Length: 167
Image (cartoon, rainbow, N blue to C red; front, top):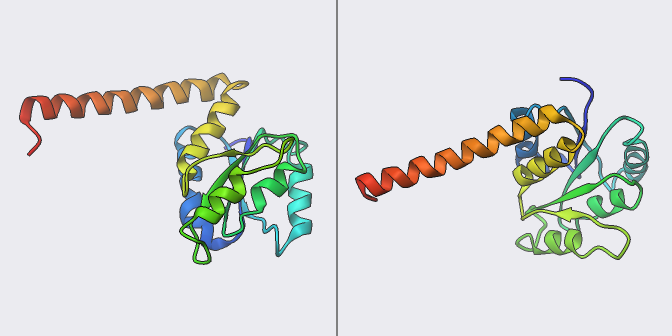
């Protein structure tokens, strides 16, 4: 793929099973991305460098996944003018994920983070692709095809149930 347009970051490797869904949908939509670990608590300098250089590297949007206290998305958003999409991750040190959801969702005025559902990395990837599609007609076309495939699948399933019953 060409130069990354989306950055996918997470606080630790334990977030990867969730965050790989963003990578998978971006791959399907042919949106170039990069993926790495950036911890707000264990590597704050790395987080600062990532956030402050992301635009210069050519990124259009950052997807940041975090569990527990989930500071990564908000801290990154405070250091960049790029859109940041937060993915709350239900982690081993989480309170059923609610701490992560609220930590990412309840940002102070002036530091927005678009927040998807708990473990909602796939939707974060789709939202990132939609942002990229504003300046990339190929990605826009890929999204249109993806949404058409979803519509067709639902209609085919509905037709099958209507014709053959639900059992």
